Length: 197
Image (cartoon, rainbow, N blue to C red):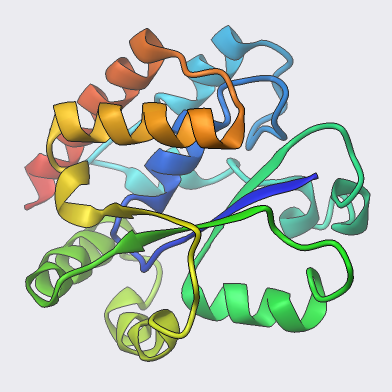
């Protein structure tokens, strides 16, 4: 089932949020792992010296071409997908455009003073991509997307606020919240991210 779509601009921690909310095996995982422990071990791989490696291979089947999107529409497994604004709009036109829609749209809200930070992070984390150019295009359409839930980027930079927000989102999405794993993933993500600022 289309449980939630996390819409975020590059560099604003969408992958972290998605990983935290898909530790529960009732969700479609971004890795091929049948237990929460295995998902945690594969998800908790942030590395400031090679961020590309920490993201490559962590994707949902329909994105890689290993599967189709439509089986997720009526599957009992909860799909919590993350994408950038332009990807979301393209998905509205091509994938989730029928009777089955996302139960929740979660946006990572940005303030004007966040843009420089996320652009810097995106460029350093994924030097293989042209994020600096892409971010301005994403921001042009970001405000058009209507969300049912949100999390502020600044709150992601505070551990206590982030943990509180993930617990709240997990409750809204009816997925298990794993406080110890989420805290450990956050701590490694934060440590490796702050090295890049």
